[in-house]
Length: 298
Length: 327
Image 1 (tube, rainbow over the protein chains, first blue to last red):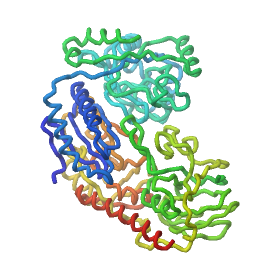
Image 2: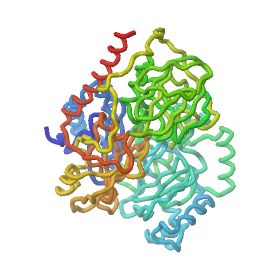
Image 3: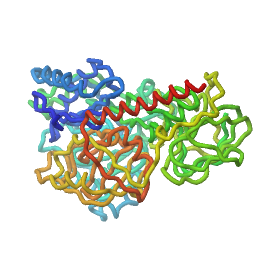
Image 4: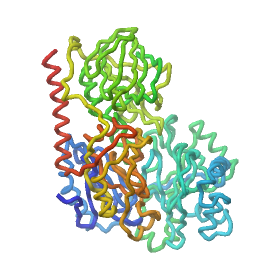
């Protein structure tokens, strides 16, 4: 048997040992591929295939975990081939999604303390992460970069790595796409809820720990909560789901502290709206269409 | 109840692991050597998914507050009850007030201690397994500390005359300083250049000192990747890919400098090309290896991997039958 099986839509499947199937839909980051991955994995989930214990969508690929004691993973290839065939005919590029507002204190003192501690691991030891990101993206000041980052929406294209982690791609015309390398060597510390930026992706660190993304700020509200099951954490310890759209709203210290106390009391209410994201509309009008999505916020 | 007098180096509560949450970033966790853990449970009459204690190099000292049966499997270690040596891989009666202590290990890394009834910590998301990175499961989501008290679930087993049963040698594991570890190629294996593909299974790799529940780093040979224009969003190193899911047991080689085999507490995805996956049966064997032991990777087919897994299942089933026959 060949190592790789190719499906009719060009996706390539292979086995990850006896328990995993890995399907690479594309190799380049591409929103269309992300939406296809979401549609494909939704179909796999809907098929309720016995023996499949985990369905793990990523940016442009997905992975299934199978219990070989229940189901021979090789039996799944024809099932997946059929799902890919069905979806290849389907030109619909919309997904059901949510828009969630994340209140961000950019240039916060906690991330600043950490990033100064790890200057020796950074590309530009004499700068701050934010000043570095501003400069390499052609902005003359940090507030301009913050505006570019916070005034436009971001879509979660990969949920994983650690519980609560969601890598988000900004919904902007390609010439406005911000980019930054990861640290030369990863830090051994990052504050929880820090807003990180690496490659073309933003994420909010769910817990304190190691990390390599540039540190831009800190979110007042958590994305991972195990101790106080308030609001969205009533049914899940993690906030983000694949395809969620985030609005990083720039806030000041007074509001940060106010939200923190409400989070501590379990009374903070996330602003979450339900919407449908349509890739073709985004492509037609990458500047204007995302603005209409913000209207879904309560 | 069991009182932890000394916790050992790194002792955690584990069961078969957490299923259904990989897609949102929760690795499965669970016993690193699932076979030894299953054998310990079978010996004391527990269901296969009962929670056990997993030790690392130095096991704990524990005081039992209830009579019961215990079994210790996995690494080769000196184990005593009230100072008197006991046998591993068998069923041992332990009485209220007695103290079980682990001494040094002469082979392997991890011991599994099953207690009749099973450890009764609160399950989190369907599993009692400890996942320390997210402070989840087990005892407060962490390794044991002195003074911890572990609840033991009620023992449903009525048969008690098992204490003369000893597992035949062929059903035990024997950790060695060198093992052949079998892999199934796939994932992003096509990104490895042909010479490195050959090297991966032709040369031995050494288990480094960084080998734990998250991952095993293996050193010895520089691997190189094919030259290509890096995909958008992947990062500039030839070993970089657009972040993707990592199977448990998958091998990666960041910048080609060393191999990392992802273990049961690993991150669920990331941006390094995955090259092949250690089969589930051999992941148990690798989990008992340590610095500076060596492995030789061997490529096998999916068919062979599934057959080996089925054989492991049959071995466990034959153990159940052997025990039933003598009790």
